[in-house]
Amino acid sequence: MRTYEEINEKIKRGDVVVMTAEEVIKVVESQGLESATKEVDVVTTGTFGAMCSSGAFLNFGHSEPPIKMQKVWLNDVPAYTGLAAVDAYIGATELKENGDLDYGGAHVIEELIAGKPVHLRATAYGTDCYPRRSIDTYISLKTINQAYLFNPRNAYQNYAVATNSSDTTLFTYMGKLLPNYGNATYSSSGQLSPLLKDPCCRTIGIGSRIFIGGAKGFVAWEGTQYNTAVPTRNGVPTRAARTLAVIGDMKEMSTEFVRALYFHRYGVSLAVGIGVPIPILDSEVMKYASLSDKELFAPVLDYSLQSRSRNPLKEVSYAELRSGFIELYGKKVKTSSLSSYYKARIIAEKLKTMIEEGEFLLTRPVHGLPSERAFKPLDIRSKEEV
Amino acid sequence: MTLVKKKFLLSFTPSIVNEPITYKMVKEFDLMVNILRAEVSERGGRLLIEVDGKPSQVSKGVGFLKSAGVEVKELNEYVNRDEDRCTHCGACLSICPADAFEIDGMSWKVSFKAAKCIACGLCIDTCPPRAMKLRIW
Image (tube, each protein chain N blue to C red):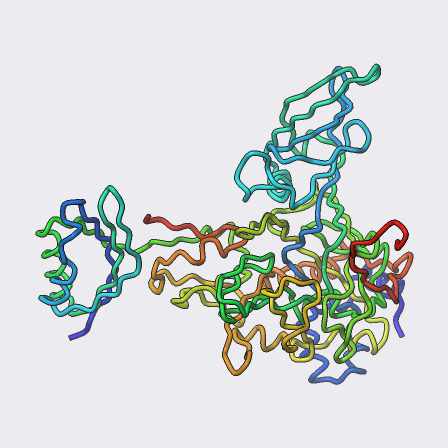
C-alpha cells in the first residue's frame, strides 16, 4: 500500500507522518490497525544499551619517515593492526595493559568522540619502504583520516533476563546479580526496540540507513550470532535472536549516544545508541511495529548455571519487567534495566524529527537479512569430526 | 513533637575505640540509632549512624559524643551522582536496599534521593557508566 519511494517523496515535501514506536501503540489502539496504517508513514525505534561487539576502524595517516605498525596502543589499550601500515581496529572490550581493568577500548572510543587527545604508541620491525621502528604521539578525531564504528553485533532482537539462584553475588555482563533471586536484570528497550518492532526484518536489511551514536549510518550485514531458530509469541522471538552489524562515521557521533561502560569484575563494554526507522509498507508491518510491552516477552535465565544451555525459568513481558518487579517462585523480585529506556526514547524522537525535517531519507535494503539461520555452538572436535 | 532523622559520621581515636560511647548516648538520650557503616583500623574507628529522635535530644546526644572525645560530622551527602555520566539505565534500582533511586514512569529518568541513601556503597560498582561516587570513606 506504500512504497519507500512514496515515503521519501513525502519526506522531501515535508508532509510525512512519523511516530515513535511508543506513540503508535496508542494510535493503533484507538483508531484500529487499518486506519493507523493509512495515516502513519514511518515508525521510529530506539535502543541504548551495552553492545560489547563494537569497535572502530581508524586510519592514522603516515608519519615521516613512514611506519608499518606492527603493534599499536591507544591510551595503553592495544588495538589490532594486522592490516595495512597505519590502519587499526580498536575493540570496545579490549583492556588497558598494565593498568586498571576498568579502562578499555570503549573509553578510547568515547574520548575520541568527545574530541579529546588520545596517546598513540606503535612499534614496528621496519622495512625498506617503512623504515621507522616506533612512534609515540597524540591523535584526535581531527588529526586522523577515517574513523568509523564497525560493530559486528548490535541491537539484539531480544535478550535474556538474568537472575541468580545461588547464595553468592555474581558479577556478570548483565550486571550485579544478588544471591537467592535477589534481583533480575534485563537489557532491551522492549516496545521501542528496533528488531522487536520488525521481527522478521521485512524492512530492515543490508543498506538500511539508521541512526547510530548520533550519526547517520547503515546496516552493513547480518550481525554475528544471528539466529532465527527461536520460539515466538505474537510472532516475535522470545529469545535472543536476530542481530545487526552496523557502521557509522565517528566524526558525526556524540558521547550522548556512545558511552563507555564498566561492569564490575566482568569488564568493559560500550553503550551504543541505535535507532531504526520502519517504513509502514502495509498493515502487517504496522501490526508488529505497534506491539506493546505487554505483548513482548523475554526469558528469565539463571546465571548461576555456568552453561551455554540454560532453560528459561519462565517468560515475562516487558511490561512486567518495567513495572519494577517480576514474580519468581512466588517471590517479588526487583528488576533493573541495563539499557536506558530514557535514551532509547530520545533516539526514537530524534530520528522522528530528522525524518520530519527532511534530513533523513529511508533506504530500501539492497539485500535482505537471512530468513533462516541457526546459531551453532563451539564443541571440542578432532580434525576428522569438523 | 516531631522527630528528626539525621546522619552522622563519628570518628573515634584509638584510645576511645573500646568504650561503649554510642550505647551510652542511645540510653541516656532515648535515641534510635541505625548503624549504616562501621570500620576500625590502626587510625581508630569510624561509624556512620542514622539517629532518630526529638531534635533537642539529638543535639544533646551529639554534645555528649563531642564531650567524650568523638569527632562528629553531620552528613548530608555521602554518595553522589555524576549527572553527565548517568545514562538513566536503572541498573541501580534493584540493588539499592534503601530504595534511594526512583524511576519516573513518565520520563523514564532515574532520580537519586540523597536523603534516603544509607551510604552502603552497593550502587558504586553496580553502575556501568560509573556515575556513582562514595564520598566519605
